Image (cartoon, rainbow, N blue to C red; front, top):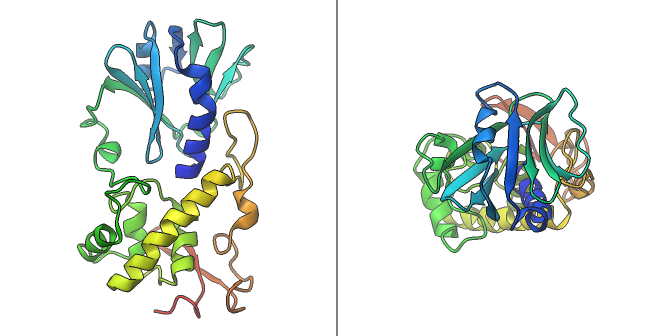
Length: 266
């Protein structure tokens, strides 16, 4: 699933192509997941933002077009769109181009809501702070993690302590900070290390254009390069780059986790 760096990469590529354009017509797959795409027809596009893993297109009529990419969603602006069987929605723009949403596995979602009204989108409504905002501090992270007895990695994936983390960047941040993923408590110094690691791995992911392991493609159809710099995620059985101990993996709370048993002790 695309995480914050992948969605931010797409946002940056789409922004100059969409801002100032108007949606002339829109069509979608009949599924309830995608049909609200048609509600954007006739509106102008003021800005393109990101919140956690959500892409938010601000319309000029005080509404927002919200796209969640799911597992395999792809957004691109095309001059001669190819409407294959996996295209779930498309928006024709006033310059003759078309914004196309393609989603092979149909886990993505599209909504159009009044600006700021996320009550009907629980996961967006409950998002924690953005990792680069002033609100996201070591003290905030420590307080949020201490408030629950769930495993630390599970809490990170909930999007409540901080928005935008998924399996890849959570594993990387926990490895960098030497925090055991299945721990249910965390000290203040460990939370401070984890805070810094979260910010660092997400910035690196953005700088590298995201992580392409299977399906992720950016808005230009290209791959990210962050997969070449991963130090923990997906490397089970390989030696830890810090201590040489073979990395391990295990499924906790339905998510596969990789960690170093020496650097990230219980």
